[in-house]
Length: 384
Image (tube, rainbow, N blue to C red; front, side):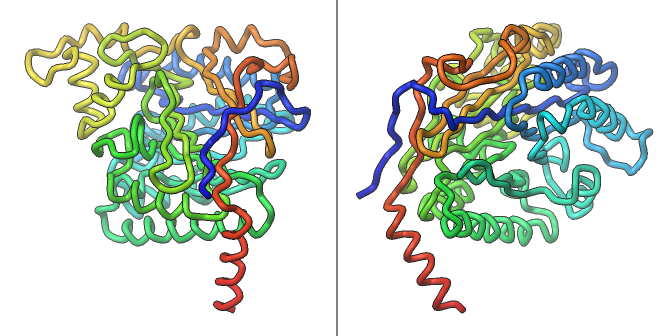
């Protein structure tokens, strides 16, 4: 019998721990180049707060700079933006708050990644565009979503296929090694509102989405949660599905740098209909032109004066998403602006002191886990 996600009591287990997701510092976005002091100020202040709050670890889900680093020179604009981000990240006290994953975004490897841009990313950011780690019974797996979004350049399709094989192996290994749950980290969301939504600039192509999620959700310990960024806005409502077998929730978060008030909405989180309309535009440029400077229409003259109020790095808008995990109880999360983060007491703690107290835990997907683990073991024995 397939078990779907359950909402569990809000009481925090003593074994819970906290993760902070930073996404899209994207230095240079606000003014399409220098100066980028506003975005960097938001990032710097956030990192100082993380040192104070001491979550178990942090992850950075892509788009470090706005211009692609096209040269191996600090004189290149993208290279200067990248260097500035790395200087900021040095403010994070790794002995208190390790940065466990740094993912590539489209502004890090290009909208259409190539072997060269992927190699350059790996050289600048630690040697690989994917990875995994375990924390208290939960496996976290980070992937390069740009390989899925566009694999048209020579050799990139093979890399995307290798990544899917690697992901499958990671999930099998998680089951063998006794992991209770899996969390997937991705820059671009597989889907933003619904699993069958049209393809666009802010989600994976439909065919790839279906193939990868059908594979992952059929595993003994499937990903229950996908943590993503890219959209520069939060969503109002849950994006989850059991269409692929085991239920999975996709959480799309705003930016630690510039947030975007799509179509002028400043509600703090976009309603699903507006989010879907923006996300399924064919490109980020089309989304910007139609939903930032043209008020939801593809016709008419753009009003670029709207950009100043709609694309901005401000303490009341920029922020992070705080997750609380427990291998038995599940997970819960909430977006915090920098202003709200500053108001939290230190250090982060569970129980009634949790900043997420009152928010229910979502239980992990456990679809026929025991029998499926046995099937994986039997298959691997036959292969050996």
